[in-house]
Image (tube, rainbow, N blue to C red):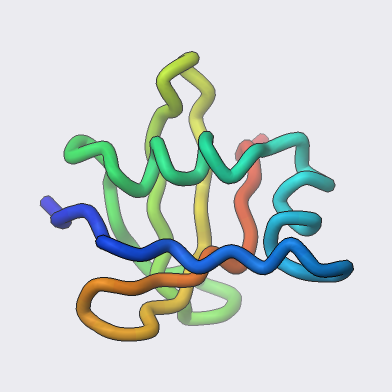
Length: 84
């Protein structure tokens, strides 16, 4: 089980991570819900090697969130999507 991070970095500039996850129909709040859920599974992306979280939003959507760890309490989501 992972502890929640204190800081989740968001970039709402064009081509930032907010826009990127929005292209997948996902909000920053949904990403936060997955990342902070103690039941979320954590692994590594096979394609990028980055850490990822797989879990459910409060509304029951199953999401995969790929992120990078900045330090022990800070992460930056890279992308998020609903697996097929």
